[in-house]
Image (cartoon, helix red, strand yellow):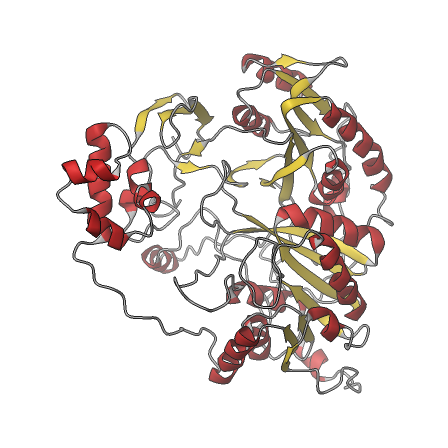
Length: 598
């Protein structure tokens, strides 16, 4: 490996002892070799030339995992299709912790999404911990404001930066590095309390610069004239299945659909997180087995060249991706990273939702995207390039960019950062995790043409059916919950792209929540720690009843005060060091600043 000496020197400077023998170690960093051309190929394990290499690497990783100490961590860096197999192979030895997404400098892939996503798999011994890291708040390259619009709640913004998530948008790595130094540096920061390290990085020579990553096929966009002239074949799907909302279990309804009749199969199933679904137990010990049963039916119903988009958490997607690419006719085109930050949980903020994009056969029969790089002309059915990731979505900033003739658009890649989760109103009986319309609009436009058929066996409140009908597609929507189905029917009848559900009138408080949050921050600075309820009674000008009526619990109220408890913030050169914060006794953590942050 070309930069092995550099990595070894970085590890030693961080206080790690390199382990090269047969002894145990507390940190293992692996970067198995792969052919650069693998990034641009659709992946099916039984037909891909990289399969033998993956099978040789898996036992090496298992052997290395067995030598990890009690609090040991293992990081594996590589391509998503390969990492899914490695994660499944390591499951008997280690616990899955995080799938970290990292952006790489890549070329456009004709007929598909630019394969920017490179994965960093983190697995560990049970109970092993990692350090908390905060990064400076990212700022808009155009207006200079924070990328996140705080909407009048900037007093809640921590001055020491934002917690690191499992989607690293602050760096773009070079694919010529088998293990990029900036990634390795952050691994060392996350693992700072450990002493010994083992590097598993192949010494194979780097590929020449003349490697041809892919052929240059001519990708034909949607042609309305050709579409109008298509022969109207007799409909194979029975009329009583098309364009209707069906109340049934997914397996029963799927078995009634004829084989090879669906153009796009979409699935956003329950994630086995013990959410409250009527008629379904979201706490299955055989969750992946249950998924495999209906995925077999999904594959059967897809036409050759048809597309499957499957949303899930990375912890489950590693198993499903490995299964689908090893046992059938499906090819993994992209592991799409949906960067959608939920409530903070864990040390790394869990922002990564996986969207597996597979096709029945090696290439897709439909892919409607207007690439700026290839100079394709826009057409109505196409997906257009999104705004760049480093500009904000404030209306004022968008207006100024457009007025200046600088829309700041970037190519659509397999890291989707511009679509956010829909929040559910407190106390609402609507579906607990609705799929955003914008996400479904993008998927349906990418993978289908008008009059094609879209299948969704977990329709929920009917978002996929509603978007499909608005775009002129046929749909088969299946849902077993009567309340969700009734809400879906109501949305379909109202013929609106966005439905605003009635909410109860807000309760007027004597004192605003903002004032109470600022009061808790004042008390925290006054006494040097998080205030208790007794502190509020003693020192605050507001009574406890005001806090209890404004916040769901005392821990929720204290979130504002935590942002003020920072012992020190130091910037030296291009490094930021923070001590203190919301975790008393935590070791100081430092991180590098990019040139645009300094």
